[in-house]
Length: 302
Image (cartoon, rainbow, N blue to C red):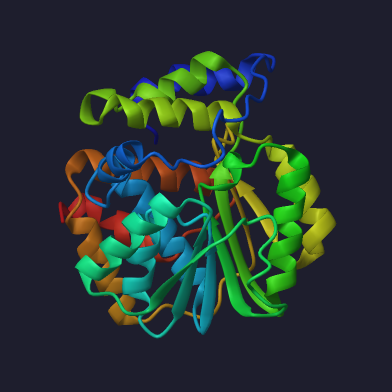
């Protein structure tokens, strides 16, 4: 079950009326070099987002198995993307972002890690003229859609996903869902404040305020993707929303072993967070095959 300190927030979100309006972020593109560097450093793979990265990496890997070309929309400094790419060496990834500074950080990081199956493209994810129709075997996006200023632009982004993806291509989109109460948003934004720079907590708060409703995602997914995708959300509050196509095939023993290794490297606090994420999604109907393997190791203290 989720940690005890989270229970008051869960209860609040179940019982209160919605009072938190959407507040689009003040800047669409983070392009100040110093700000980008601080944000990137705080959010790298061994930081406070470690559990969330591992969860999404495992889920995305299940969704894109067998895909040759995958486009990542709003890749930022590529922290999430590099972990996915390392677990899927036979897949070529194209990270797309509008910020030149973010892509500079991403290219440096990829070079540092010696990863050779990622390229980058500076482009607007609502109008990706540089990518032709039916280019990708899969399109993914992690925690980027809330940066879009309006629901109209979110719809344009979904239309671009449909255009550049092959007819039978895979899709995995995950983003924040807007909570009902500002108190709840503040709780999640600052729950790890002592472990991270203030800029990271502040960005988290702004992201939660800018999140679209679960219902916004449901409406657009049905309109653009039809019955190709299913929508899942953490329960009982949709702080995270996933739109995805069905998983492809079974995971290999080697992949499961590598995920177990990544999980074993997490601190006990981050392993607890991984369990929280897994449980809240499981209650929301999203079954986890690879992560069931990972989190079952908790009892063995691995």
